[in-house]
Image (cartoon, rainbow, N blue to C red; front, top):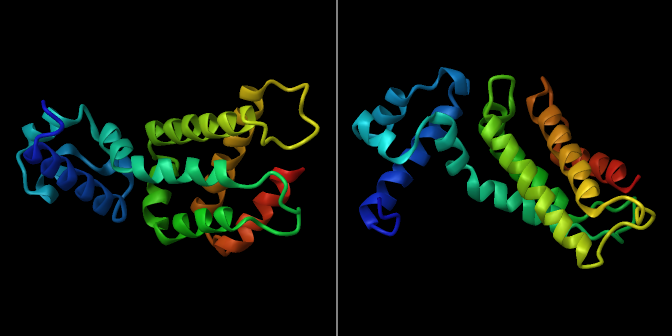
Length: 185
């Protein structure tokens, strides 16, 4: 399959849009390939030509969001004061809040292991690159860079998951501020 072919790009875009719409309506484990195909207005067999399963489609559909999350994590200034939450972090939590239904679906109990894994992997890589460039919080020189990055990535994923899947999530700015205090500890 030629991913540069406009027909392939259109089909994949319709599939990504369909899965994200369905994710706002039901748990991920309840979404079938048939439902995705019907919503996208294509044949079920066509879905399998592009994606092996629903989880792979979700990960692809959320790839831009994952990149945005990794970029925001990388851009948080290590030297920002503890009492002042970086705007990039607030923007990240606001992005997630604006798409809460989708994030609840992909990070909930019946969510996407592929999404969570890709998010953790991308954020870890972004933080490790930042740390190697010399922009690392002080006091951790005895901790390997990759381990430090993985720890913070896991913490971010854990906080986002807990926050967005909670019964009454706090406002995005409040959660970002709480995460920043923990991140700085």
